[in-house]
Image (cartoon, rainbow, N blue to C red):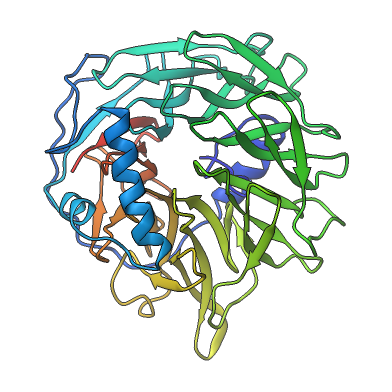
Length: 437
């Protein structure tokens, strides 16, 4: 469950997994939402035909044109309607899958061609990377030098439309390093200067620029950007806290223009969002409204940015207390436009009664469609997709468990509205899924 205080919800072993898993298990709250009828249409390990929405294209030139059209609308503070809106409200379609040899499968990203990347744990609790092609075929891989012990291995996080993958690997000494894997299976390992407790890439764009976070000797996080030539620049948001563990700057995603989104903590431990332009200009932000400073489970409680669109629109979440009880309230999702205007939203109805509903915006596509997770009053997780017209569809994968902490966890959406993520069944086993409109 990836630790996004970097870009996560991340079940990342080593230092990252320790932080992530402890914080993530604390999440709870909300209202049970009505779930539409779903269809599970694939047996595991079986190759499937490509799944694309009606009218979709795999021509990169056409994809760029569509992306530019959506980006122009978002840049003007308008959530575009039409393609994404129609797709997000169409009938649900789930496909379940497990990587070959997997005990637990964790997809993390899907590119615009429909290729999914993630990692899986084997019977020895070692981790390996995988790619799932649009036709359902799998390939698995390990970064050179990756350890094979418990909670060691390879942890891909992101994939570009050219098929270049980035992520981290943990070696035999449980030290974490960054890697880039090109489409010919060639690996480049790297460490951020000043990294003592690990380098954790979290995003990559079409040009091959990588962003992520690294931890220093005091377990304080710093953002970084790595150019396609391998040059690494570190950065911190002005005013960031650096005095203790879990403070710092967390870079979470990067768009085609090289703009990075993320969150940071100030000297008091209060978390905010930020945008960093390709020229190094950093803009901190705080979603307007009555906010209670907090940061839990990798989801920033005051206001934190996670996903970013080609136009620079971001999504994330913030905490809003219920009037009269400042220690009780709701996490709400938001859409922040490039012009710094905001839309707050909830994945479930009646967010104030009963307390507490928790909505986390995690990823956003070029059209402004957002996916993420809603955690209900029984600590059951439901996925959602919020279309560009504001329509919210709740997503429960067939087979998802209904016990504490179980449910459906989307974490990536591509240009055509295809989602990926994982669900936890009643036996607490994680399986990957692909959802297509």
